[in-house]
Length: 100
Ligand SMILES: [Zn+2]
Image (cartoon, rainbow, N blue to C red; front, side, top):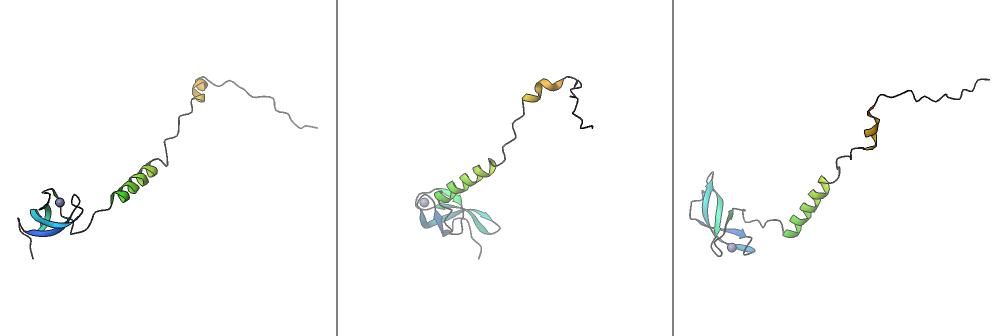
């Protein structure tokens, strides 16, 4: 059954931290897209009555992503090689030859 603007449906409100009555304020394909909590009047996407991940989980995911992005830092440019730009002179050392 299609939802209609102004319909009152249950949804999870993060501000109230519980299921509350919500008014449909936006529709998408005949289904509630955005709802407004009838208790605190905050608008949010319709969550299909599902509680969002807890802050703890979000924090964990944040840390996880931070770690992920820090796994492969760009390699530091080696500055020692800067002086070595000139033509290379023969630095060959006479190798010891084991001629008998
Ligand atoms: Zn609320």
